[in-house]
Image (cartoon, rainbow, N blue to C red; front, side, top):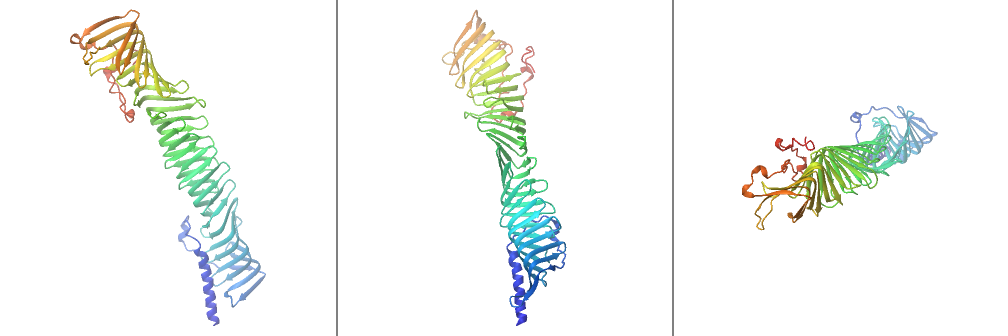
Length: 533
C-alpha cells in the first residue's frame, strides 16, 4: 500500500509541474539555443533550518522551512519554505522567493516552481525581474535559463532609465537586452506615448522597432506607422510602409519617412505627400521634406501642387516645388523648371512661377502662356491676380500678345507693350492694351460668316467681350486701320508679327501636366529678346 501511495504522490508532483507549465503559451524564439536540449545537472539544497518528510501527504518531497537556499550551476534560489523533489530534480518555493544568476540578474516573487532538467523557472504573484537598470513587473513569469529569456503572458511592465513599456504578452532577454511585446503594447516616455500591436525594444540602445500598427502621440503631433524604428534617446525614427506624420494642420505621408522629432524635420522618400488640411493644399513628389518649426516644405521628382479650397482643383507640376510660411496668414509657393498647370477654367506653362498668398498674385516668368477657353495670352512676364482662388485679372508686362481662336486658320489678335485681361466668372470680359497697340479682328455677320479682316494700330485699345464674342472695342488717340475683304486676304496678312498658336503645348487635363512638350523650332521667336529660350 505504501508503494502505491508513493506512486500516487509522485504522479501528483508531476501533475503539479505540468499544471504550472500549461499556463504558459509558446514564447517567441530568439536564439538558436532553443533547439538544443539543455545539459542536465543536479539541483543542490544548500541550506534550510529544518528538513522533514510527510509520508502521507507527499512522499516524493523534502519539506524545507526557514532560510531555504538552492543552487543549480551558477543560479541560487532563496525562499521561506519549499518542497524539494530530488528524484525529478525540481522544487517548489514559497514566500519571499528570490532567484539570483550571477551579480546582474535578480528575480523575485511569491511562488516558484523550478524544473532543473529543463532549467526553466515558473514564478507567480508579484514577480519582479531586475537586470541592471531594467525591471520587469508581472504576476506570471517563466524564465528559461539556457536561452536566458523571461516571458509573461497575462500582462506585464518593463521599466528602464528612460521608458516604461507594458503589454499583454512580453519577453525579455538579459543577455541581448532585447524585449518583445505583443497585444496592447504601450511605451511611455516623458515626451510621447507609443501604442502598438507588436513592438521590439532594446533596453541598451533604447531603440524600439515597430512591427505592427502603431500610433505615437506627443504635444507636437501624431505618427502613424506599421513598420520602422524609433530612437527614444535622440527622438529620431525611420518609418516605412506608407507612414504618416501629423503636425497641426500638416500631414506628411511617404513610402518611407526619416523623422527627427526634436528638430521637427521630416524627410519622405517615395510617393511623398504633404497636406495642409486648413488651407486645402497638397504638395507631392517622389522626394520631399517638411520643417515643422519654419513650416518650409520642398518637393521634387514628379513634383505636384494641388489647391482645392473652392472645389475646382488646381493641378500644378514642376521639377521642384517649395512652400514657405512667412507668418500665420502669409505663405509663398515657388515652382522651378518646366511649370505646367491645369484647372478647368485656366491652364498655363512657363519656366518658373511664384504665388504669394499675401497679395494673391501668381507670378509667371520666362516664356509664360495662359489659356482660358479659346483665349491664349503670352508675353515676357504674366501676373495672375486671384480673388479667393478665382481669377480677377491677368497682367502681361513689357511684351504682350492675346489671341482668340475663331477657326483653324482665323484668330482675333491683340498685341502691345502691356496687356490686362479682366475676368467675369470664368471668362474674359475686358482686355486693355497699352503702348504700340496692334489688333486683327474678323467681324462676323449674324449668320456667323466673316465679313473681312480689320487691322488697326493705335497707342491704346480696349475690347469688351460678352458670351465669348466681341461686344465692342475702342482705340485711341489716333487709330490707323484697314479693312480687307476675305477673298482678298493673303495668308501672311492674317497674323501679326510674333504670332504663335501654342495649342499643342496646352495641358489637356490633370495628368497631362507631367508631359514634357517642347516648342517647335518655327514657334520660337528669334527677334524678340524678351521671349526666347
